[in-house]
Amino acid sequence: MRLNMIASAPGAKQAAKRAGRGIGSGLGKTCGRGHKGQKSRSGGFHKVGFEGGQMPLQRRVPKIGFHSRKARFAAEVRLDQLAKMKADTVDLSALIKAGLVPKHAKRVKVIASGKIDKPVNLQGIGASAGARKAIEAAGGRIGE
Picture 1: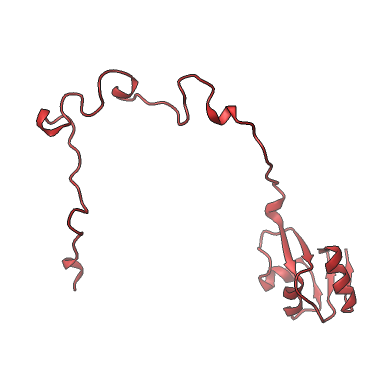
Picture 2 (picture 1 turned 120 degrees about the horizontal axis):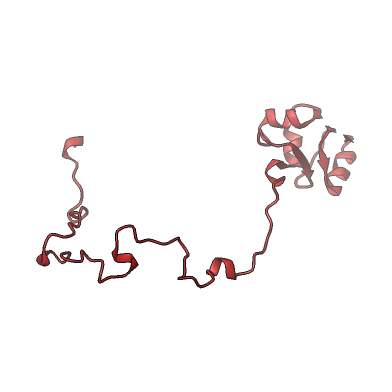
């Protein structure tokens, strides 16, 4: 098979609608726009969600929820990920270099998921209560 032999499946391509080409085309006279009204005119459009002056649904429904702008720069690291790291002192730059947190991370917290058996010293990194116990039990330190 060659590239110039490839063809679309039968019926896959339809001819474009040619509006205003006579009554027999099915799109003559009003060209499928119906009679009169805003939508029949050229440039006759309204905003998405416009409901004819009635208060739109998007504004009627109560707003809930909140997206923290700080959350984008926060990251989590699990205990088992820390255990795999070569360095004994772990800080933000070491975690970024190891690829455990994204480059734009500004705050990191260790969570108690998995096990750690080697001593690790954390600097400038937070830890949950369970992670703190596990790190200190393994002989590590947490220096804020």
